[in-house]
Image (cartoon, rainbow, N blue to C red; front, side, top):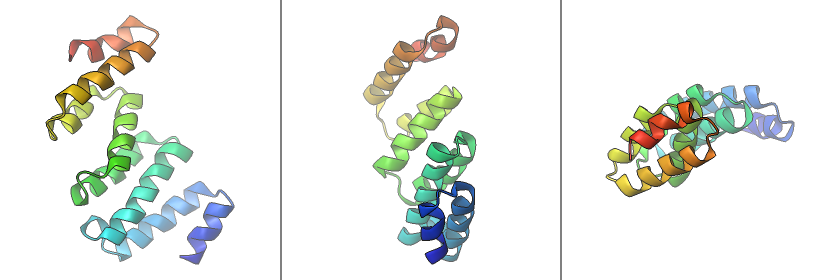
Length: 127
């Protein structure tokens, strides 16, 4: 654990992500609260610091299996799916929770932020 603190302080994000993966697995992965916390941190680092949304989605989806209503994980998944243009997965994320109104809000925000009609039309067509 001390190594992860050092890597975080030195902003060595790839090394920190690797250490967090190992720590999470040794803590039981998504089946334990400690494992979920470590995986969540890893997923956020992959997305926010390493700009690897696909890898982040893989990790954060595991956390979601263990903590289905974790707001930070849901927010990060929403942002990653949006960044990747994966509107089907975004729709599945919200439909699994029955959050149709929130989904339409997200699609509306995506459409407003997207400068080209070609890119925003999949989002607009879903609401």
